[in-house]
Amino acid sequence: MDYDVKKNLREVIATLPDNVRLVAISKYHPCEYLQAAYDEGQRIFGESHVQELERKVREMPADVQWHFIGHLQTNKVKYIAPYITMIEAVDSLKLMQEIQKQAAKHDRVIDILLELHIAEESTKYGLTLDACRSLLADGMWRDMPNVRICGLMMMASFTDYEAQIRREFTTAANFFDEIKSTYFADADHFCERSWGMSDDYPIAIECRSTMVRVGTRIFGPRVY
Ligand SMILES: *Cc1c(COP(=O)(O)O)cnc(C)c1O
Image 1 (cartoon, helix red, strand yellow):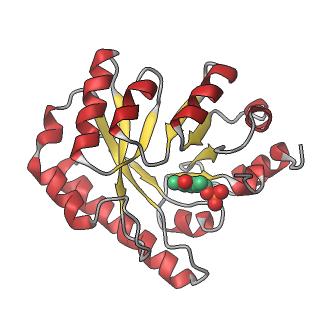
Image 2 (spheres, rainbow, N blue to C red):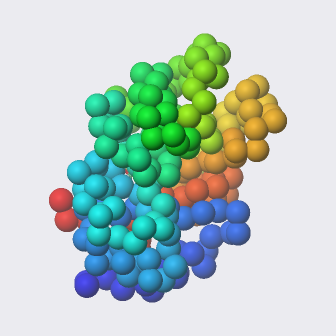
Image 3 (cartoon, helix red, strand yellow):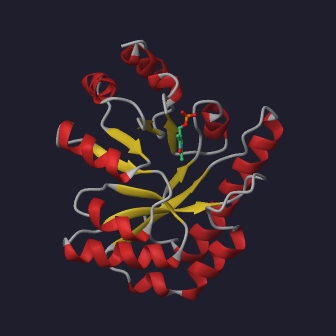
């Protein structure tokens, strides 16, 4: 192993406040690396490709909690529905409806986060704040007993300009408060703010992240 995964993991965890959880982003890394993190106590892992996730689920211990962090096509929900702990990047009603359908088949409740698009980069993925407001105002989600909306997820712009990153995280944190008070004031499970990656997670924590998604800093650069 080229990277001291255990040491890197310990260093990252040492910087996290008690109320912030770590999702170890293990996409493109071999199970040997995940196992090293597991042996050090890490249980939450994030993957972004269904095939790769399926392979790793078979190889890794059963008590790993898997988060799906990538863009999920509706036709692939059925593969991960039996075991996925959280689907982090939900950005359409159509995807929510499919998660509801597949979760019901397995008699499970699947936790999800709504993915926001706040960064300046043009990406197809994520809900604008207005689209997210409409999705919730529309109310269809209330008829999805097998889908539990646990909070929000987003990625900041890929930039060295710290003020911009901070502004984007702050926008997300303020939006969380709006959604929480409008729709989930009495729902304790709506509590997650998933932001912060290897290069910006300390800023994310200052901007009220509860869940950081860190890959490179633990496992080294990905080999695609
Ligand atoms: C790959 C990925 C990460 C981790 O990125 P690092 O820079 O390696 O920490 C976090 N979130 C999402 C959505 C990702 O796709």
